[in-house]
Image (tube, rainbow over all chains, first blue to last red; front, side, top):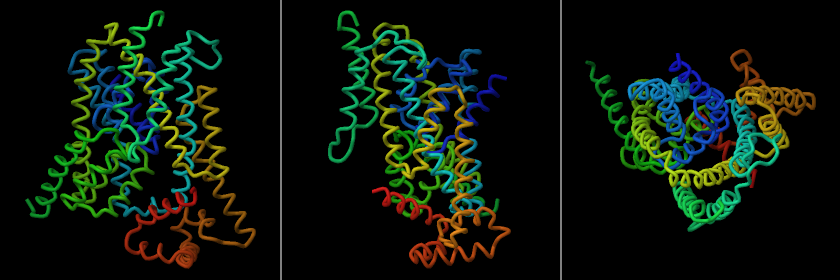
Length: 201
Length: 251
């Protein structure tokens, strides 16, 4: 049953994501955390891991969730089955849709109406991503689980790491910004140095 | 076995290996994969031309799902049929599955260590930066009509302040876009000014309204002769042209 749920939830995630990998974050946050499969904290760690390992972000995050959920039901075999269910679920809608498009000679995609809708959805997704960002900012930096809660423990070190990396991430060298993997590495090193060695942190 | 089926199978297997390599060596997904895919699919093995690949990316980006998966399925299906598409997609997924499963076990072993905890605390702040960057890049590539800002702010407020499912927000967006198109169309007709952009509604049911559609095609041809040439060649190319025109408009 749990495996069917994995397939179904990730099928929904795959179907309602337009604009690739990152557009998936709001939906994954909601669906996966709501199912009680993975805590928000672990999911955030995993976004970092997905960015720093090869392969498409969507496939990585589906595999990871599937493995963790499968693991919790049994051993390695369950983990593998869970990973397969989630990953097949996330790619199934795209595979079906793309095959249809190729077979229908791409006529459908060309229609202005279709293009208009996709453009509009991307505007909405921008707003959804912004909401995810602010939600995470509240929970990571201010330890707040929602807007309505009063300010919890203020993590000033987290804020410093965020501020420094925000600058570093937008510096262009030869017209290119730093690869995400380096952002993750720098944040890891800063985490160890600052949380580990600053007294009272 | 028929020789053509054998040939297709050969291509499908080769695409499996090719996309396995792409999945293994490209970080970041989507557009980060473009260079890698270009080198393998266009330069080395000549499965597609450069402009065909750009069309594929334009389609992949505006259909649901991960861009890289869409590209793999598209190239596979085009070159070797449905099985080609499935083979190429599996090739792309396999490295991720193996690597991620291994990592998830390793992480579980070390998660309780205090210093590893500090590492992840730091990384969480780093992820905020990555998501902020995603927001910025989505915003940069967004069309910026008044309606898009309404959608952006509306989606943000509903998602941030309520527990409404993201799926409903996207569905409502789709409905609103269609309503706006219909309204725009009706308004344009009332004014008696039928332009190519505003006859969107007629293309929605072009099976029934072929007359209207052919008129619209003529209007498009008059307005943009370059677009007409490519349309006869390959329908897909228009999307790229539309998008570049959009981006130029933004600047």
